[in-house]
Image 1 (cartoon, rainbow, N blue to C red):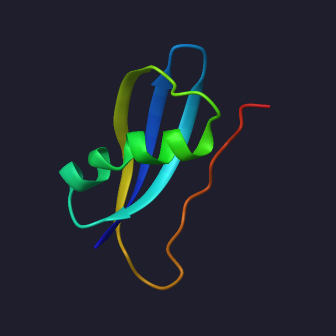
Image 2: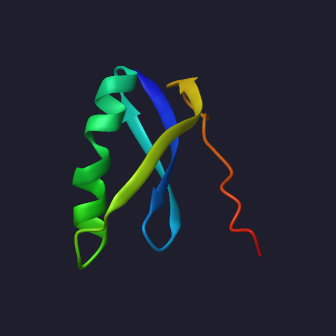
Length: 68
């Protein structure tokens, strides 16, 4: 299992998603599912890319900058 940090460019903003998945395809497959649960509306995804990928292990994580 891997811990993925994805950057998702929506029509009106950019968001980050951290997800646990077995492979790259599975990580991308979960993007829409998470976005639909998070947003009240179904956002239009312009682009999604893997920013970082780490083997899942105790203590692994990501720092997500907000740009402020």
